[in-house]
Amino acid sequence: MAIEKSQQLSKLLRKLSAYAAKHKNSINSSKFFIQKKARLKMENKTRWSSSFMILDSFHKALKKQAFPPDDPCPINLDVLELYLQILQPAFQFNLIMQKSKSSIADVLPALNIMLSKWNRMQVTGNYRELCDYLIAAFKHKFKDEINSSVYCVASLLNVSKLTWITRQDCLNMKKNALENLVEVTKQITHKKSRQNSNEHGRLNETLVSSVTVDSLAECMRDDDYLSDNEVGNEISTYEIEKEKILFIQKVLDNNLIKYKSNAKFWV
Image 1 (tube, rainbow, N blue to C red):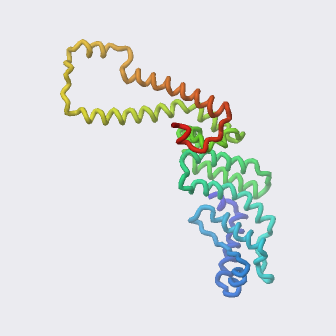
Image 2: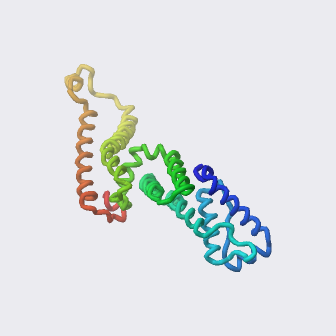
Image 3: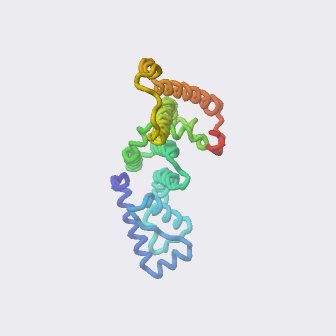
């Protein structure tokens, strides 16, 4: 885990967790924080964004001046805010993924933007090291999604959330999505076509064919240059190519990134 690799941050989180536990177990200290409407959190390694939430709870307590005079906050405000700035993109990414309406179309845009933020942060030393750890960790965790043409194309076809399309840090994703648009669409349509064909075949299993083996039509079919299935695939590819051009003209070239509903656009 990226945070565990950052010795300085790991040490700081343990220190903050110990501070929070100490005051949680003290009746007098608890009353002091309750009066200030501040609640310090402790680390929970089983929960995403636990580190951010610890730092955020101490940040809010500092802003409310909730710490006892005889036991001040164990972390400097500037250091606290810098760590919050670094961890915030991961926290926001987590919130997006937890939404009930999120889908595979949300993964790559959010991931690209998050990684770009860490790359562009002007920090040095342990802070830069932490950013690099986070980038490496998320790239490893989402390596299959990053290399997936389906995830890439899904992001492009999600027209109600195309605000990422003009961002510099998403240009490669846009390029890959356009390059794979036809192929992914063909895979999906052919899969659906095979499913429909199988269903149709099962319905006709009990029917007796009226075509004899030596029929002229059957002989001609065997000599066709392209089978019916191959002709259908060629027509399907042509239609998809046409739809791709219309999609680019209507949505991308005209910058019509204002659709609030995927359903209304695709109807």
